[in-house]
Length: 443
Image 1 (tube, rainbow, N blue to C red):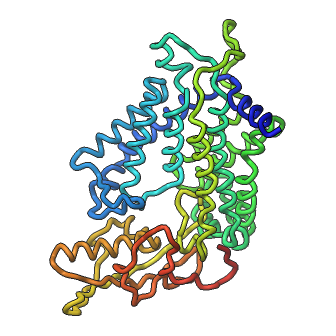
Image 2 (cartoon, one colour):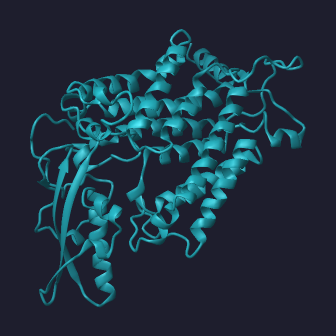
Image 3 (cartoon, one colour):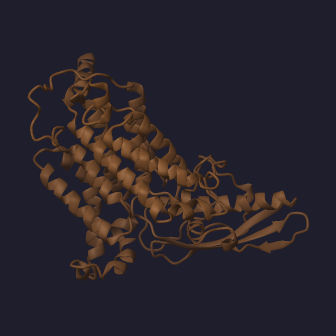
């Protein structure tokens, strides 16, 4: 029985489906990637992210990661524009997607100050395009080889649907917190700034609006992938999706994320949706070429399921400690403001030196650092390293106060804790003070 079930699953995964949806996704996604990279160049973001800062906060253990010198990062983003175009037209598709993933991930791993969920999604989707047969139809690759493959294994479409569905579903799971459901935060903070929006501005002034948007937002995220999969609800679900992203894009400064999600969600339509009709000579009964590295795909799916839930193994409120906060689709859940006053103390002479953060950090870095525990710790270690190069062994202390989602400012770290004694690792950030119980909270 078990063997028969396994065989049936494998047969369903390998069943040939129309490759038009996969090809259309490649074209739309590649075009958006090229436009986004060109926009990054045109708006001065290269200067702001890589040339102006003196200090960088690399992701994870990549403490050695730095921008390329001189015009190097302009070159990186210029290449990303070219690679996005190559993906769109299907020119050496897999290599272009792999290189895009590598360069894009490098560019954003240099400084986690600028982390955004859709940057993470771009890295994941381009990594998938590097292994999927997305260039077998409607592409320059197919023209060059003279072999147009009209079908693709069903698992290729399922895998992309799964990844896009994770953004919504785990984004909904992340909203099942007290701040979002029972305090309507941070929407209560954000919506007043959008009250002049045409047409819907008066609605945003109503006291009930943040609550309504909080609850419907959570319900939408939790259900939309499944409603898109069901043929009867799919047209209405996709219309709701377009309206949702249009409204959020108009209200909040979230860049091209709405366009990415509207385009990517077309994957939930029938595989043949881009075609008016099939070419007469085409049959979808032909077995598509190529399988998949099964164990790699299984591991990938398991990681994408577990990673957003990892914060449950850490104590405390994830919005406060940020243990397991990144790479978990925590979308629009947090509004933090903070202040951090650092003191450097010479271990031998006892001399105290107060740090002016602005002497080291850009305004955006300073704002992020003062509210995010890992950036605060990284900056303390940077100060210690800098003094070490001058032959001084120092301790670094900080008096940091943070306001989370409209709460009164609270001390984040014990002011008598030498941050140079703390090393960031996989364990919980036990050095962070607990969030004071004000109102209704949930971890």
